Image (tube, rainbow over all chains, first blue to last red):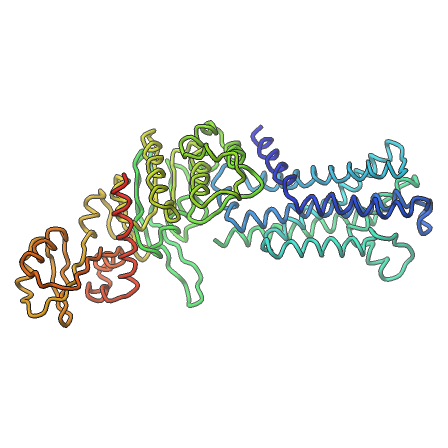
Length: 245
Length: 326
């Protein structure tokens, strides 16, 4: 059960980190409360058929959870900068469990973000069936897989100084283009582009409220493609980083 | 096989001006329970050798065997602990939490409290790692290495950032750990540190082993000091007869005496030549001694190199303090 102890301290470290709290919890929560208190009465946002309180709850959750997943990259970059990764390589911790712990921690933190926003959403009048809550959560967690790979990749490419702005800017851009701030409808260029982004499909999980399938086949394909490509790039970044001393 | 064996190790790196031959063929054996000093000036290849011993670097040629196993296997079994030359601690944890976290990775670690006790970390173990002083950080790094309760403990220039008191207590800890039958290898460029704390020293220069033996022998080989004094009109032959003097040369009005026993030499010099002025005694730098041993430079040339002389005086400032305190 040694990896449990190790994961527990990884989690403690993350929760004590102020930047994480601001980006993954504070910022999305405050924004959600601001946006949804002014749009409480909107029951059909931009023709999506979804109440604004639900749409923005998932939108802000996607923003917060993407930040949470990528924050594992910030921790990897910080550990590399102080030589801690070399120290870990002379312990019995395998590379596999190192990454497993990082990803598991990121997911636990993402779950915390989800719970906080779900509670806030319920207080703003979001009401779903239990199976809808579960299905939505499952889709969001699947949509986050590419972000675990992206975090690991950036953690091995960037320094602790440069990774902060890179993650902030990256999440901001993906959120904007993926429809976190406003629903993406129609068939223009931006809408087509959005459908190729994992962030779009995370936001799209709110469509569980309409019944039917919130993700068409394209959604699964986009998430799978991003996961494969980013995992390969992350593995390459890792090998390049450890081959050099 | 209860020993550590480095056989025919070679490692080069790509540098801006072509390949850098960091290690050019090293053969060393370390018996279980031995404390061995890897002694050499900066750039001798000590850290590269240690990285290969720990499995952090793959040698270009040669093999490493740690108690009969490849380094990676020994590391995975938790038989190796190390304090690397560079490295800080990760943030957002207290010292005790960090040591506990590392201990959880090993199959049979020391109790965390024992590791903290042994390294003198206990009184500040509750503080966050980023609030610790430099000396306290070194102690926690030491606790991180020791908590594994490793058979082999590797220390790469562990005391380079410590003050005199820090060094004294650090080596006291190492003595206690060695007394448990553990094998310790440490790299240093302080001759005195090797002399006082190791059973055996391996001297490295330019990626090769230039001497390997009990520390007192090694010390006698490289422990010469130079007396410089302004002393016009004195016969060099007369100076060479003074006790403890091995070699003499003249530079204008100044003379330089290479001494195996500089204490005896300086007493005799002042008794015979009370008018000697501007007297300096400089410990022979390791760099200087190694150049002589490897035959890659005449002693005179080495003495004139400003860098080598500077290294010598840095090395000389430590032993007085270190041995005085212990």
